[in-house]
Image 1 (cartoon, rainbow, N blue to C red):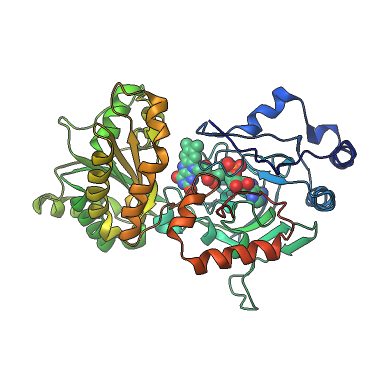
Image 2: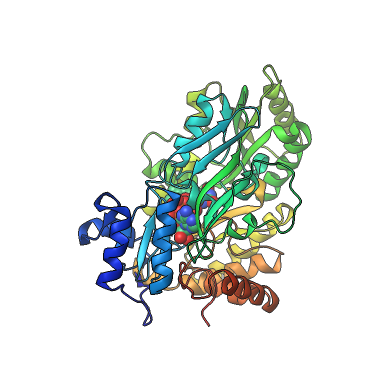
Amino acid sequence: MNDVISADSTLPSAAALAALKAIVGSKGWIDEPDRLEPYLTEERGRFRGRCAAVVRPASTAEVAAVVRICAEARIPIVPQGGNTGLVGGAVPAGGIVIAADRLNRIRELDAINRTVTVEAGVILSDLQAAAAAAGALFPLSLAAEGSCRIGGNLATNAGGIQVLRYGNARDLVLGLEVVLTDGRVWDGLTALRKNNTGYDLKQLFLGSEGTLGIITAAVLKLFPQPKVTETALAAVPSVAAAVDLYRRMGDAAGDALTAFELMARLPVEMCLAHIPGVVDPFDAPHPYYVLMKLTSPRPGDPLREAIESVLGEAFEAETVIDAVIASNEAQAAQLWRMRESIPEAQKSEGGSIKNDISVPISRVPEFIDRASAVATAALPGIRVCAFGHIGDGNIHFNLSQPPGADRATFLADWNRIEGLVSAVAHELGGSFSAEHGVGLLKRGSVQKFKSAVEIDLMRRIKRALDPDGIMNPGKVLPPG
Ligand SMILES: Cc1cc2nc3c(=O)[nH]c(=O)nc-3n(C[C@H](O)[C@H](O)[C@H](O)COP(=O)(O)OP(=O)(O)OC[C@H]3O[C@@H](n4cnc5c(N)ncnc54)[C@H](O)[C@@H]3O)c2cc1C
């Protein structure tokens, strides 16, 4: 585990801490070591931080008052949502954590405008449920939805399984409320779908991983609820066949194609071995699988016929070897459980070097071939565990340690192997981080793969909005 504390990390004075505590009261204050612990570590156990206190404001005004004191005393702030991020972005390096969990109100739901105004600390699955209760859909969906929070989703521009149809988190936002680094509040909570009145400021904060300001609320888009849903798992002979099936299904189903996920045989085998209740729906093993979901808000839309027809054609063309269409919700859930259990199953197989890359969809087969060759040459015995959102060109190209290898020694090779895989993605016009962001983990890749012009613009934006560098210092931008 890496310690993120650097020499310039500051611990606030007792007077500053007392002033902060006075704003939020004892209910909004944590400074006991055992209660601080969950805020100092992160999902993958790669980084460990330190902070003087966790501050839990209950309103935007309290966030603003806390930030004003931090600005005056130059106290570093790390905004934290559900702390489910996968790149160490929410790990504190001194100063305080501002936790969003008490900013948890749904302020307004406008069924006609199809929008919801929600505070940053609302848990994603709670928002999904509130939208469903109002007969609408909030489509952002990811395996961490039971604990990640809207502010974190927007700060990381989260993706997930329905990007194909509804876009990334960024595409779901109409307005934002942000506490700036000097404690002023930018009220950009517009619910407008058309608003060409200068720079689109919200885009700066979306995906900025807490380095430019604290998102306190947002106006988000809602959609009609699906009335018809069909889920199918197809066994395919190759990644190229999966891409061919994607094209066929997209041509036939249009925007009804909502999710299209790839799983190689190895991660499926890991699920079968380690996740109770996961079963292989096919009689024989196959090289790759595609899990797809089609949805429509129109009752009676013949999606099942569309899937059957495309799978039939693909079978004739030898693009599909075998397929199963879920006959009820329980079967569909069973298929999704396999896909969503892969990271958990992989943990039982020792260390895993994670690569969250994207390339144009047409280049995914070449990426997987080339990256597999590069990784295997770099470390013989390494096990390629490719899966993910192939319909978005986004593959989780995870690499499990060779059987019997020492976990720590294997993980010590993370940066070298990740660099090789990212270089393949880059050569194919891709990204070294498709949906997880940069945080601490990928700052080196920003330096390596972004142009000098891009890095200069990013630094200028950071300096303009956070001249004293108090907001999530050391994240996203490369050192220097
Ligand atoms: C099992 C699992 C599955 C996942 N699947 C996906 C997936 O499919 N797609 C995907 O994109 N991600 C996925 N993730 C990653 C993670 O869940 C997302 O990045 C999520 O959006 C983070 O939300 P959070 O509330 O946990 O944020 P945190 O982890 O608390 O914070 C993430 C970053 O956002 C900043 N931040 C948090 N709140 C605010 C705020 N209010 N204002 C400003 N900055 C803020 C933090 O400082 C940090 O830099 C997964 C994670 C897990 C554990």
